Figure 1 (cartoon, one colour):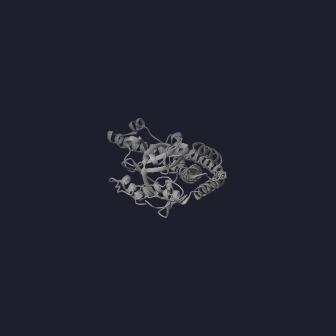
Figure 2: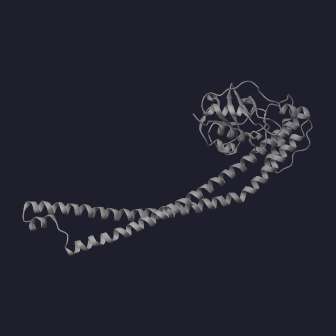
Length: 348
């Protein structure tokens, strides 16, 4: 996301719009004609940088989708093994109970089993009746255990078989989806690389003074996060001020926007996705007038078109990794981007 820190009194709106239109149509298109002045060069960098961020986000989102589908395949494969084993175990129990059930059926058919009435008729005393009744009750309980075990074994086997079939369908669907993502992943990577090269070319057209302003440190004041994970993440991000923006960067050697926020929250023991668009799916939405340190602010025209993320540090300011040629810095929220889409509270 290109920073709005460099704004000059005179900017060619027509030239900027033309650049945005040309570059946005095709991430692989060449950088526009050589700039006529510093403002024109900065406008080209802003446009090219935003296209590069969008292309990178699309590529990272595809990678996230692929990883998710591969995880689904792995989970479904494990489920197939589990349910297949459950079905086999249940079938074994069913076979074990089958012999006992057959014996019960045979006894009932041949009249071997007595009833309480037969016990009364054949008993020679009240004690005989009580003894035989007790034995009958025991036999009934044992028979019930056998029949319940047999029924449960059959139900478990059938249920495991149905779950196995469902897992096979899930596995196939996820595998098909992963294959479709793979087929498009290389194209997205090529688009992202070309867009990044265009942004670098646009940056190279800036004069030394403009490059110096871009590399400015931003607000160098003291910002301390509150207790808790969000505050720890904020302190981590603030501590990286001055680290250069690196396209695709995720370490203190260099960060891009979502690489910085992911790394910062990881320092607080909180894992969030890699891309800005995926990070927007985490936490709960908060309004811009209720931001607290550690909240993430997202930029784009829609949830599916998010291209930048920053972190609120308090006092109406954010820390972010802006764009090519810049460093991690703290700036007023109004200078971090004009297309704020929403904000999320990751923890708390």
